[in-house]
Length: 310
Image: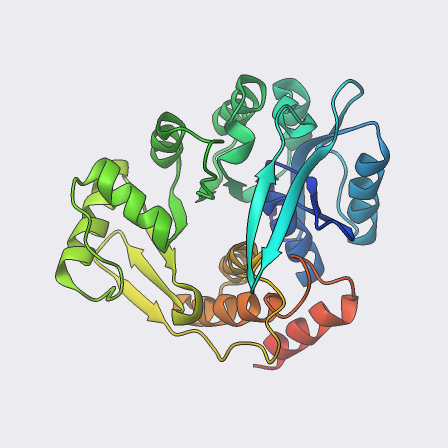
């Protein structure tokens, strides 16, 4: 019997680096990684009938991903984000009114009909307009899958109300340090520093967030310091990051890489500590390649082989 699908909802777009265009979008990065690991993601998104959309579709085909959730809007442009690199960091310029803003509820629900799903992954960017936001709410009503929220707050794209509603809808939430500090300020009215995630004020604030939103788990990614998982019964698992790659190309997609391995580990029945360790390691490796997804299948085969031997 095949493993349940992981439903991935949200944007598929191209990251435009100027000299090249790389198909991306946080949800699509997660879906492609999952497919490369041998999982069965069902991506729910929308593209335009244009050359960029053809690039996205070719990635579906390259990774052997089911296209039942791929919608096409003939009047909208496929999503595009301009990425400006600077000394190992990057800045996003996110364009408005893209095809992924127009995901429709009826075909999205039809795509998941009869599909057993363990997890429904979603973010916040694809909720910035009413159409796609309504489609996601329809999926929530249709599916009983665990809901994994990758917050991915982008300045000027997502308002606090969307964050509030998304947190209430989620079972597990992944945030980075900056996002965690925002949540502290919005919902706990304290802003403890996050340099020491073992500090009592940080743990108390994280527990308050989990109680407020009824979360099963809260994951905080800490870049080169690793990650921390807070469980609903007071469980705290800290995982150190591995050594940085020999050459740091960019950090685009590192968080998406982490999420994909976390979800794959959940589906594969890995222990939590091992899942976090492997998610950290894969995220670090992605920082050594251009963009969020490796062009060479051998990159993924090496990870699958290492995981199967352990």
